[in-house]
Length: 99
Image 1 (tube, rainbow, N blue to C red):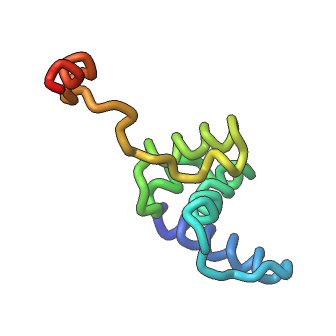
Image 2 (cartoon, rainbow, N blue to C red; image 1 turned 45 degrees about the vertical axis):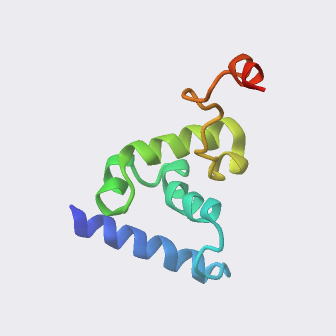
């Protein structure tokens, strides 16, 4: 079954190349993610089949699909993982008392 998937992906990219599309390395993370989920969006491949050859987890693929369906290509841009707050930070009222 795995060889079938590899064959499909190879054929998929060769067809794109023959249709005048240039096969190049993705320049952005957004483009890379879009290339991985594109066969699923076109209903040419199932998620479980893609996960067998994809270096990313099933959870990641599903998150990308959900984000793409909700926001479009903008949803595939990585978001910051920086915390929005600091739970162990000293409260402002205590900081003001020390001055």
